[in-house]
Image 1 (cartoon, rainbow, N blue to C red):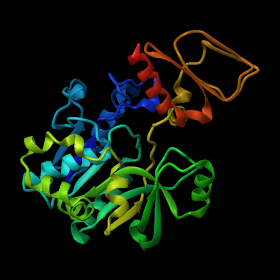
Image 2 (cartoon, helix red, strand yellow; image 1 turned 60 degrees about the vertical axis):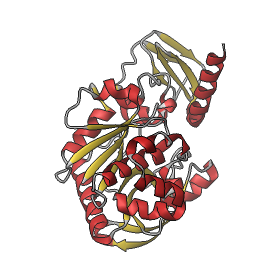
Image 3 (cartoon, helix red, strand yellow; image 1 turned 180 degrees about the horizontal axis):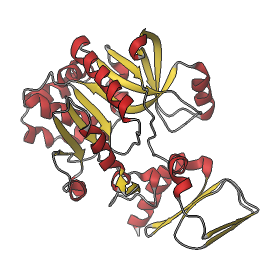
Length: 336
């Protein structure tokens, strides 16, 4: 098995703590560990792992250079998870490792239950090797989250490993649809973890993007990378997995959080944050992260986060708007 860790994102939904110069995955968030280093520690406990690839940007090399036993793969330009997965599969295919199982992992998620994580990954690897199918992992939703993708399942295939058939993927529903997903029991949060091989992936790519498939398997890497900007800038689920003919989902038995929003962060860490310098009067359900003295009077359900790069003040339930707001702010600043 080869592990490919996707570490090229800028974490804009985590602004102002996360910035393009130091994104979320490299921040020391958990007992002085970064989410990236915690991901590496999880991978180190997978007995079948032969090599760890890090899909990242050139400017993030300083953050990963201190870690040992990893191989950086540099994306010339961000092309979402589809570009990262395609670069990984080409790299391994070119090395004659087309049938080697590849575990794809986000670099910025939190998983504490290592024992069940290892067991679920082992079951997925066995399926990929023996059944020649893609395997993805789903999380039982606990509330109607509008910021996650969802996996629609069909029927349970094998009870012993909680294996389900996959009917499709649904990206970031509105609240009413997310509430329906929660009640239906057929939808699972897509946690972004999957296992495939280069040959299985290319089998699907050949049908969906035949020209891109031909270029990818035939061109030398240096030539192929010069046209990297032509790769669709999309989630891999939307481009490939949504249309895959042979794919199944394992219901994850491990705990999981993508720590992708301030809500998710405070769910995990708020009890550890010193609040002695925060005075809230006639206020409730507010989350505050700052080193400065702060008084809040008569305000409810707001998030306040301050760093040297900026100040965030927002309603708790509006965290999905932060990515767009940050993008607009950056454009406005760059125009001046």
